[in-house]
Image 1: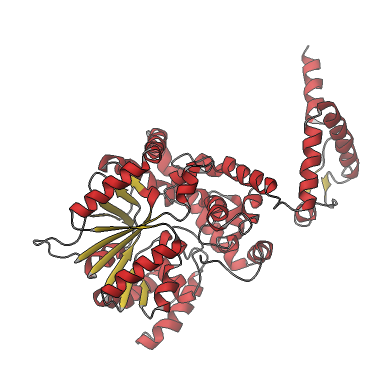
Image 2 (image 1 turned 120 degrees about the vertical axis):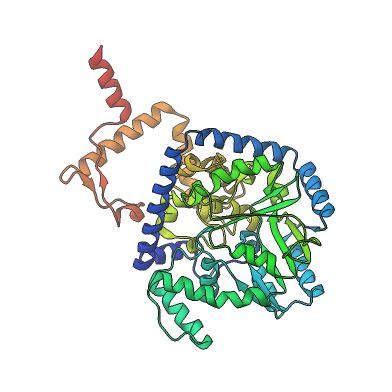
Length: 475
């Protein structure tokens, strides 16, 4: 697995919060995408009905996943393609390496694929001497920067225009591009020119698969740049990498998800390119690969299917939960330490990489619920994060001080009279401490909050006291 080494989650978080350029980039991206999604939702009266339909389809598929995967494999085979089954990330890497070896490949182009990030594919290919070129602009930028993605749909969202210009100047100058660019349009055009030659030299093209259609054996990719089409049609060999949960029953079902995907991800009605691929080139086709392979990756998904995190397999990787998460918007993707950031990453990382390795992520969530509200397939992310916390507690991973605090809270919560008494005493004390200014600037044990913000001082009574007083006044 590819993990970010070096600082801990807490250290990465502190670095991110004090990185002014990062904060500016995150603020611009998250606010804009949230507003665009809201506008698209308002313009589509059936949006909520589509969400419910998508949830139902996903639940149906998960209940019959083996059957739909077998049907998909049969259709791929019937159209001249080949399906490979990978139980682990290592299996997936080895399968792809063997396909590239048999193709006598030298240059490999890649469309955007989070599964390829998950299995650390680029590092494995490069270690065997292959030239690997990311063709999605965001992925190309972070490849030049030697960084993992910061967002699942906008990998370079953390980069400013100036940083991208510096990267292009460093890496494109040896190719004959002397001008240091600052205009976004000019930078996009220069990247397009640099990448164009790679498409024609590529022996193997690797893409992801947003959806796999059991009815036809087709893979579906959505892009705004057209790079995915060039990657999968110009190379001699096309490899699709996808998780086993990406299968849907029919073309009509895929349409339901496509109507939700772009609206939830980037606030578009639909992406610029929606491309279906079904097998290798036929005799009368003008273009297309000579070989068509699909690598279906499990990597812990079967375990999720039979456990309390089954609903996470509904995820269509739209990124809406990231775009609306106040924690992600404050710290960015790299602070999460792996390829899946934000609320969805806070669930997936501990499950795939281990509870201990991803301990901090579920505990960093505020459980505000915005992620569940905007998820196009209605995944109850806060509930899954609470379940992870429960399992961590049961497994003894929770630090002693926190375990003590949770046990003390549980003891109080089970004894209402004692709880109300303690709360009245605490609220009264805090009210007196903050009376002069109306706020609490320094509190023991919660310096992480009061070092950077003031908390409003309580007004002198608990909610229950105020409610009883109002109720008594009405009677």
